[in-house]
Image (cartoon, rainbow, N blue to C red; front, side):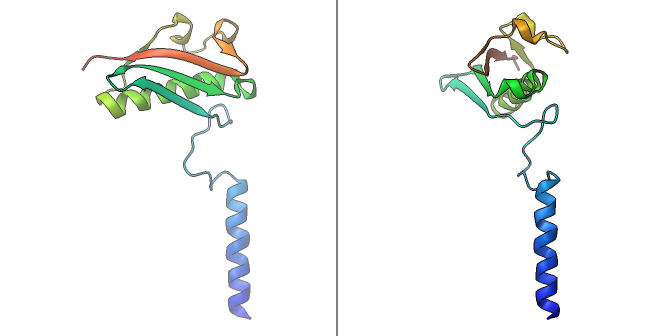
Length: 117
């Protein structure tokens, strides 16, 4: 009886953790939201990249932050530095104006270049 009670308590505790955001596999949240993000770059030239962030309507500010996070991750992975430059001047500010960003079909698509080592 004690074992059944212990197993039930563990299962309930684990279920509660996922509701609190603990069971999300380390996926970062931006402005309290998660986004689908993809990065593309040519195999012959990883310095240039294009990032797409889906479901921008959940939080435009969060989508911009997700793109910045992905740019840093890409540049660190391939060049060992977090330096990058956006091809759009609108993306360089801390609080970018979302009206001027390239958003189409609820997806933000931006390009950038990793800094030289």
